[in-house]
Image 1 (cartoon, rainbow, N blue to C red):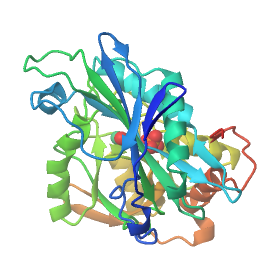
Image 2: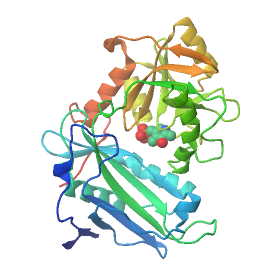
Image 3: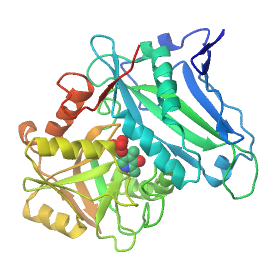
Image 4: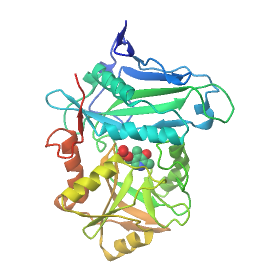
Length: 361
Ligand SMILES: *Cc1c(COP(=O)(O)O)cnc(C)c1O
């Protein structure tokens, strides 16, 4: 069956896979819904988008993405409220950011109207896959790849922009949770003038080797430091990081080496609203080490769409290991800030910042 809605050609899948899925036991990003969205860029313009059954895509083996890594992506979530309405959290930020990433990788920008039309149509088509209730969400993966065949190391003239949908539970149920981190003192994830601020595919591949080494030493993730001095704490692999020293919340300023996280900027606003003292400035490994030694380092946590806030229980630096104190739930900024944000995402409280976006029926 094939129909055309607005500007999208829709080929529905004959049968749904939904009955084969155990929604109470989802490993993050491992299950995909019945449909996916594809829009091709050719001859200098975006073509009529297609929504079709989820499955492999055909590409020439010389496609530039496979050789030169011209690829960018996003990560966002949709939620179903008790009244069955579908909401997203600050999607305008993801829509703008994928184009900021695309420009840095010399790729075409994807038009805002196509982004919303495609995503909302796909979410509505696979709406049964979005489960209600605490912790349940639909993880959305927008991405763009260079599909033009050819071995010359130059930007492609053909691209594919796609949306995939993957149902997720609370990150903590899906095997996430408390992490110990290693502060980087040798490897780097990004450098000034580079692509660290972009969600470019290669930024992640480059972290796998040093992260595997850190894991052999008992750390789950690395907190990257500036590439030239390894002094300033920047961010983790897919999360921005926050430090609570005394009752002040610290995080690094944005730069071209750091991903401008939407969770990070939401936390900064909510923290200020809570009357928490916030400082956005360079945070050095030495001051955090000193604070850990003298007992003023109370919390560290990562911030990103997948986990919202992910507590860090300890860190290692140059052979020394530090454990953070166990705070009571009522005393934790991480828990307070996570609740304030997830309550907005799940439509439980007034949206005083204007962050929720209703998917129109
Ligand atoms: C995606 C990502 C984040 C978190 O960004 P959010 O918009 O909060 O999801 C932080 N750092 C890196 C490197 C990332 O890729």
